[in-house]
Picture 1 (cartoon, one colour):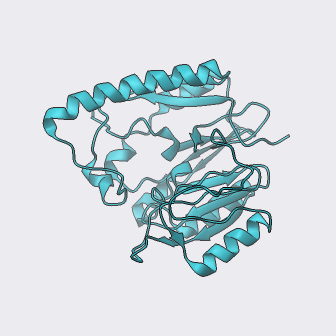
Picture 2 (cartoon, helix red, strand yellow):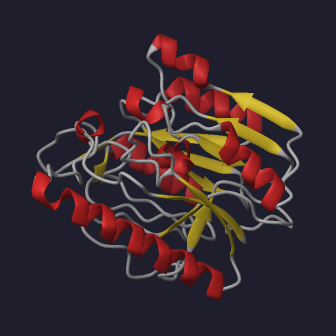
Length: 262
């Protein structure tokens, strides 16, 4: 039976975590850091990584932790869910990344570690990375929010989330694509990192912005009349989601993929 959450997760231990000038233009959560504090931020990131891995393990989640390589420096290596996803039928998906610096995160040895340590058997490879040459991008579960039970893929269009690739991904993995646009209160476009979403049992939380009216109706129609309503600042007060509800990059008997929690 399909489930929403993974019970096995890939994590990459950060080595050079920090501000990335290339990706900051499409991620307003990033702020330039004081060079004097860069080492401290990297140390803190590693400490938080260890606490998260321990917390997941204590809840019965199998963690496959892989070391980041020192050269070249990869400030976003801790987010492998953007370049790879593993699916319960053995499908492995590689994603096209907008930032050239982030393309360096793709490593065969990371995939090999998942295959070996978690006994993941690759039966089908979907390699979308060739779209980088045409300037089209789709950054894994940073771009896609997946309802594995109903097989629906929600995506907010952005420079990192090309609607054509969302549709291609959905065809390949037999999901229904629901694509929409979002803006902030001033009407400026919001990118996928600004529209925080989490799929539970037919429920989506949307924050930090407003879905375009026509798109909002389509999303809510997909969720059904009992689905929650969007709010610019906080999750809906009535929802089937709990604070620990998660979505993963793949469903299945053994729950593979990276896990994103609300």
